[in-house]
Image 1: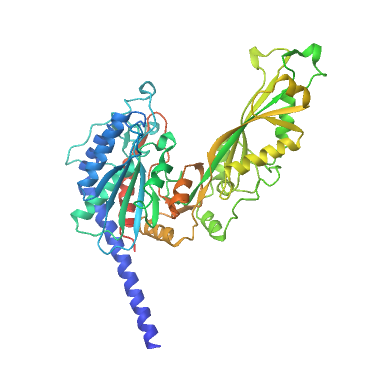
Image 2: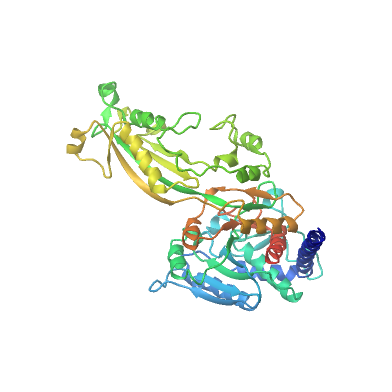
Length: 510
């Protein structure tokens, strides 16, 4: 009895000491950024001034050189990961920062390339970062960079390409490492860095890089520092992303356009045929009628449901904003819908409309279908299911436009052009490694943390999951209204400060 009591007291003391140490560490981070705000931002503005489109190899290498120098100055060992015989592929920047005695290795992913930018559509030159007193939408005005003795308002914005997506994590990470060194605080994890130079181009070579350097990239947990915080401004942790695939379907009527007066009511009409085919795939309520479409979907767990409960209920506000009075799958929340596969008609065409409409029966009708994938769905299998449904409706499927012989042999013909894509990825909310990150973020912020089992968008995270076979979690820091991928992209300075706080907490977590 005495021994159990003693162990309990020891555990409580150790836990409270750990919590105190981590809360003190976050306080140190906040004091550091307050004392060094000017130099942090000056350094960041220099980095933002380097154009970073993946196809601009010269400037991509300038970005890589800047990043490598910055991390080497802070004690990291850096190198470029390249592919033999492919000099025009933007390199992955790799680095290590080890702590003696650390038993955990975190691999930090950030991408340093950005979207292309047309200067004609920007208020200021995309790679000439400009400081604003507030967001442009809130009537902010351009301001001069403050003097060293002037305070910096966290509501100020920096406008420039990649200010939020995805250079902001670099500003926060470098400042965090500076704070560690200045205060003689040790990291509790070994760090590895994986900085992607072509994410905005779809990361077409990342799988080859992972396969070639798999042993070097081994670790315990991948942390993706990318994306915006929740629309409510509350911090969030994201555990997965949807997958994506799709196809284009063309159905055929007469071999040439026909006068709708002479042939209407007699000739098959491709638009009508396609409308009936699409209607057979999905009910108005949103229920998908394709056999087995949902069979491979991973079930929603109790932990997922508990994570849903951390989300603010904003569905009614979103509906009002979008002018909607109903949604598909009534009773299913927006976030819950991310856990199921979808079938979306992305586009329709047959003949002409408006002033260009003619009194003819067109020869074809085409639909572009988008399929978002949930955890467990295989892209090829899902396209197979759609094709099986098309055949079930009496269609003969071809891959090229049918010749006359094929037309005369089959009553209904559909050309199916299959798209690419990749699966969804989702780490369990209950994974012990990800729970350490969740706990660290809770200690770094007074706000309620949002746990997102999966986001609605798609990233090629499955490459990392399949090859490295380690848990993955996404920790966003950018403001949700950052104009990501659009003109006048920006970052709220307070979000860089937030990044420093949470990175410091993650790097000192138990």
